[in-house]
Length: 248
Image (cartoon, rainbow, N blue to C red):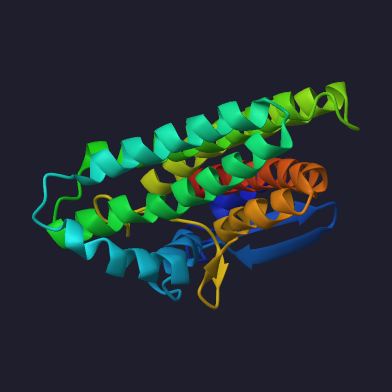
């Protein structure tokens, strides 16, 4: 029935942008204009208020202009810091975890420096775009692996490994699905990404900064559970968005 309506209704009487859906005897229509969804995601990058941590990074990175430090150097530094935090978290020692939490939030804050430095230098590149994406995905995957290994001897037991593995897999899958979303969003320029949903100067990703205080005050396990579940939900959302854009 849907093919019949597409063939004989949308091309003769109604505009192509209208898709008609059938449910037994009821025909319901809704407007599914591809540009509407694309603009929705583009707005998250170009229209929302610049996050506060990014504004601060924009100021702090200015002394690096004219130096030998490139945006890719900063990206590599953030990746190495995240991997170091992963190793420290995996030890399962409270002191190591405290240091790991501090190092990881610094790595995520420095992650804003490479993009801001690239913009100031006019040095945005396709390689830097992919490198930043890969570094971010690996950083979050490493975090979940490190937390899972470090908390396996705690209350969660073997479930810490399961949740850590699921969180790491979600981070890697989200990396590729977000790349796909960017590719299907024509309004983005070279080196631009959709980014995370945000409101009032904060992004969804900013929640990771909480890992430091919750670790220092002894609430790492519940934070690990909440962030693992959140990563899985976010991953499913990116997959749905990717295929939704492709279907239109």
